[in-house]
Length: 135
Image 1 (cartoon, rainbow, N blue to C red):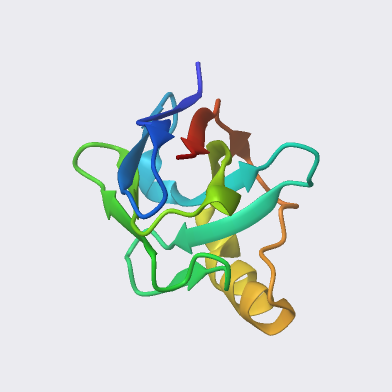
Image 2 (cartoon, rainbow, N blue to C red):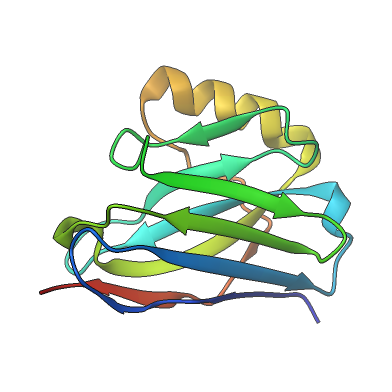
């Protein structure tokens, strides 16, 4: 059974930090690039970050650039999202998603040109974790 399980969410004050984890199982991890997607209340899903399997390319949405860092540990089949300087507008459900490796570079190239990460082509969606930023 394919699983992508996000964890690490919680309640944090503005300016605080959280580290999310996405644990993958049931598929060959090295064959898929993993990205983070969030959905705030009343808003559409937003792809915020992506990292290639090899780590040679990354993408960050403008809304999180400079504050969030994606990393990947292939030995643990896990992708992380370090979130610093959190803002109220970062409140959302955060999920991870997997794209087949051959889609990595087109995905990042398109995201950089469009200023938004396309969410079509996702092979697997994970269950999310809630991040609430509030004082």
